Image (cartoon, rainbow, N blue to C red):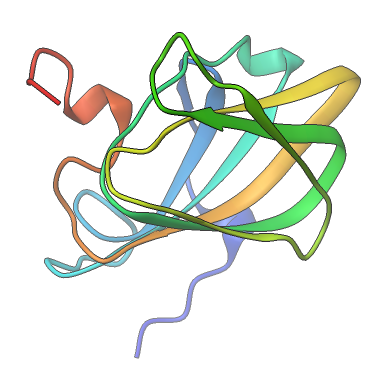
Length: 129
């Protein structure tokens, strides 16, 4: 068993969020079968681009004036879902979505995938999808 403390995980600034890799490829605890990471979406990270990727479950740890927009395409994210601590979101594979927040707001989340490849927007740049 590997025991990890979130506050000891490296923080990796990415477009629209700060990522902490807990379990998976290139993570604090290596796995070839699953990925668990933490993400913080806030003004400090800048805005996020709409994206899609592997099937994903997101557990909202904390949020202030945060929401998810989702929809059928990058340019048509017509459904807004407000989030708060304890919200669980299950995104289908290739479902378009974006994490957003109001002035002074943020979203802090745990992200879980049943795979280690093609799980982040940066992983699929240039690939058809």
